[in-house]
Length: 124
Image 1 (tube, rainbow, N blue to C red):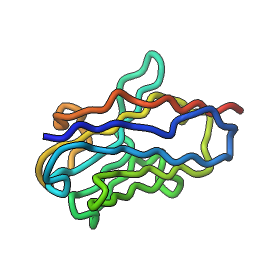
Image 2 (image 1 turned 135 degrees about the horizontal axis):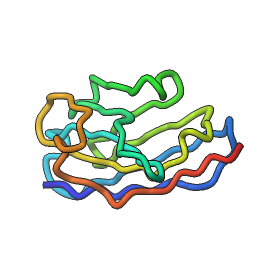
Image 3 (image 1 turned 90 degrees about the horizontal axis):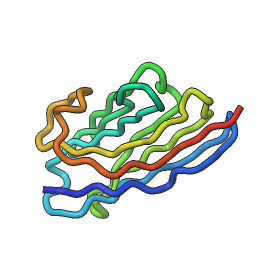
């Protein structure tokens, strides 16, 4: 199993960039697909992006395509989320999640391991 731990959140202005990191303890990190979800106040948790174990396949929600980039460094058991041109609508708690296997999913229930979340606040 793996245990994700997020870092890098903060308060930024609209148009700014932010980079989140997710360090995952455990073995066989490359056998886990990783994803970022986010949850805004009074809203359901929503899919943001995911990456396959090898890093060769990525998926993005339409709302972040062209602005966010997911990547991973399997040698360091870490996943990154580069967020550019941030908008107030991106304000949320961002969660890193892991699922064993290579199949993609944008359903939170498919991911077994979750971090505690990191707050991202974008002011207008």
